[in-house]
Length: 233
Ligand code: FPP
Image (cartoon, rainbow, N blue to C red; front, side):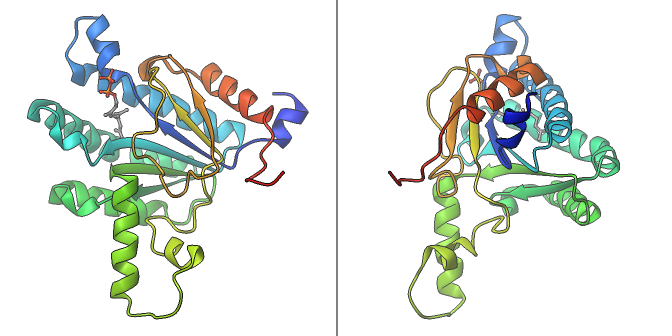
């Protein structure tokens, strides 16, 4: 990476990992095999992001709408979460990665909550990269949850952006600078609705399981060439 590009590296990159199903379909394989390949792609991207110096990486792993998929697929995804969280956490810890979860976690089975809680605790002190798994996440739901928590807090006074932000799922994480979506669709599907207000978007037709380090570098190069004005002239 060139020096100029290095200077304009996003601090927080968010990814909508889309296209697992189509990747599997093209190969006449079950969708869950596509998710499995997606998990491998995620491992590669976490390593690449860390090496490239990205401080926060958030990934849309399961949306509040994904429960509507056939139960075999939902079960397959839960199985992958279990496998991944149990098998890979130690590796993430050794790589100085802090693992975090954002979403309505209480909808998950107890055993998954146990592993996610342990992973967060175990990696709490790591500061190489924060990997935020958005699981049972929805941007609108996050805003509703924040408003509910604000009301429940009993604090009065004007509702400001700063106050509401304090009740979001990961309030200390800076807003995403760059949001990437793979798989060819040109929308964000309820990902980081509040936090993404001024994010730069990058879309690619590449299906998530095919996403390589070079694709990430391409997205970063695109980001480096943009001028961010946050609404100012
Ligand atoms: C979208 O592809 C992807 C998902 C709904 C799930 C993302 C999950 C992973 C990458 C698996 C591993 C994650 C962890 C945390 C272990 P799609 O099924 O909508 O693809 P399609 O649009 O081609 O049908």
